[in-house]
Length: 243
Ligand SMILES: O=C(O)CCC(=O)C(=O)O
Image 1: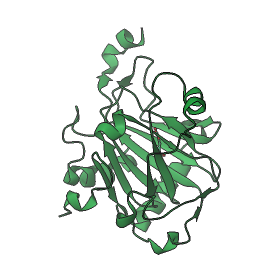
Image 2 (image 1 turned 90 degrees about the vertical axis):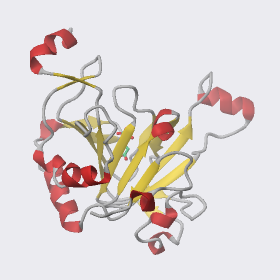
Image 3 (image 1 turned 180 degrees about the vertical axis):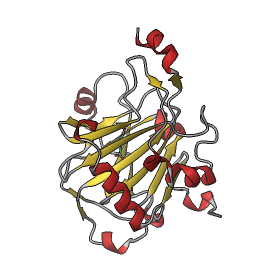
């Protein structure tokens, strides 16, 4: 690829985060969306505000992944060769992602601020398909719950950082972005307040002009989130973990 990863650094953020707007081509995006939508219906888990596919399988209750390769369409060309060339997972336990969540959000849908937890090595690589969306990072509430804290201090729980993910882009977050902040997607039909001052990766966007109005109507956006699960069990050892 001959790509200097430093050119993709989101410099407005204190910790490691990278954004590449043209990570996949339009033809690759179409092909991936077709793979997602043609997966057998039981593959989908329907949640109240989005639907989800988990590849190769859900983790066990003790956060173990049963060893199984990712399907070819999630591997090439994304992992092999592009992630490899960028060295994204070079330091992770298996030097490659072994787990992918496919999330689909229709306009008005989102995901509550949350953290991904200790099951995964703290690097997430997200490929966005179909439509743009804003990902928001929040400080973790300290001590008592956020509502009580907000009432006491009079401060609203506003996002600390906002990243606009265009279709066909790659976002890589890790380090403290992953461990010290919560991330979420607002349940809205329109992302607002888009400007160079409010969007951390504004300089790295493929098409800033589209957002000059300050807002973006949501379409159906699908994300592929690649992670490396720490604990992987070979099927022979599975019973031990399931117990
Ligand atoms: O769809 C996204 O970009 C975010 C997904 C997410 O937060 C998660 O899978 O934990």
